[in-house]
Image (cartoon, rainbow, N blue to C red; front, side):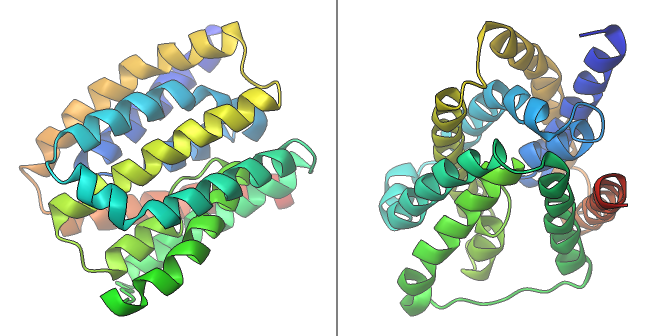
Length: 246
């Protein structure tokens, strides 16, 4: 891997870390969207493992309701693990350009929802009905595209969790998903020594970005930053679709 590619990895994870630190989500989605344009989806997903693991451990360690959130969302997270395993099998058997374009649509769709301030609502009584389907769908998208964002984040927002519970619940789901994803990638022979070293290299800019994002979170409007991130995701998603499908 040359200096140019290493620089792209550093920029991708620094940017992703800032977004993760500021709003609690978006690390894999941001990094994979940038890396997917240069490395290709299959090579890019492996680089995510170490930064995603460490970032989400850090995120859930900052709250005090981990056990309650684990009990509340165990079924959703269990179904996500099943979906991740199946999705990862598909990743290595389907044309990566098709899946990269799908990733662009997912990212662009999430961006449009945020720009339109679309906020679905799920009552506590219907949570158990939606949770398994949301988990499985999220797992399939994670396995096939590397995006640990949709539809779990939308579902957690729809439940009306306060900011701290949302950040910790999202971090817990993303951590469990990353562990399952790493196991699935290893089973497909995608994780080896060089891949782990490259993923470990990406950890440094990730942590620096997260520190900057946490600093930003305390000083700027959350809504303003979310809209900026949404525009950023919309551009990335459009580029992925154009580069892979046209």
